[in-house]
Structure formats: structure tokens, C-alpha cells
Length: 169
Image (cartoon, rainbow, N blue to C red; front, side, top):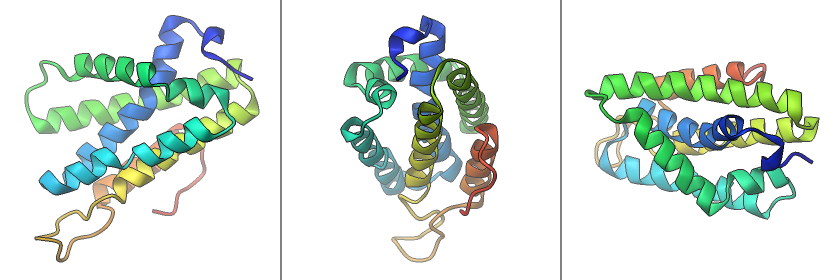
């Protein structure tokens, strides 16, 4: 069973931050408007709660309240000083994909196959929950699509980055 103590501070930061970067990258890709953004902000709570109730100790530690707060602080520093929304979207996308891939590579080296599988599933579930939380392009709830093309592309890129063959989006 892999634990936080098995990693350097820098390695742990990658493992800890990647899930939150995925959430933010998918939310930014959708650009769901005010109410959609609220729904997308709440969407990760269910997978996090499930991880805390589950058997995987690594996910327990990644989802610890203090670790989440640390991840938020780390990510705030990442976007500080970036001006426009398109630049924020691009930075979040690139960083989420890179950190997710690095986290999986790290777990392949230091973790168990069960940890790799659980972490992959966790990342994909987070992305999927956020993408499906709100309709994109809707007007007062009418029209729009559940998952935007930009979200679908990002989720496919995420699956590829973490070594999952294909996704049904």
C-alpha cells in the first residue's frame, strides 16, 4: 500500500495537485457560465467523498482536507499573473495533463498496480463529473449540450496522458 511518506515533497505535490488541476481544466474548458460554474464546482465533492470512504489509502491521503487546502494554494500560485481567460485555460489544460501523466508515471514506479488503477479511475471520474455537471451553451436551461466539444477533447487527452485506451464521452 502506497502512502504519502513513500514520496518526496515534490512528488507528493504532483500526486496531490493533479486531481484538482483536472477539475479546474475541465471546468475552464466548458465555460459554463455562472450557474454552470457553481454546478461544476460542486461536482468533485462526490468522487472525493467516495475516495475518503473507499479502501485505497493513497486516495484517502490525497483527499484529506489539509491536502486539498494545500493543493488549492499551490494552484493559486500557478495562475497568478496570467491575464486573459484563454491563457488560463491553456495553462490549466497543459498543467493538468502533464501533472496527471507525471503522477501516473510516479505511481507506476513507487506504487502498487491497485494504486495506479485507483488513481487513474479517480482522475477520470473527477473529469467526467465536472464535464457532466452543467449544460454548455444553454439559455436558461434550454438547449445546449451536456459535455462540450472542448471538454470531450480534454477528457480524451487526459485518458491518453494517463494510459487509458479510449473514452466514451
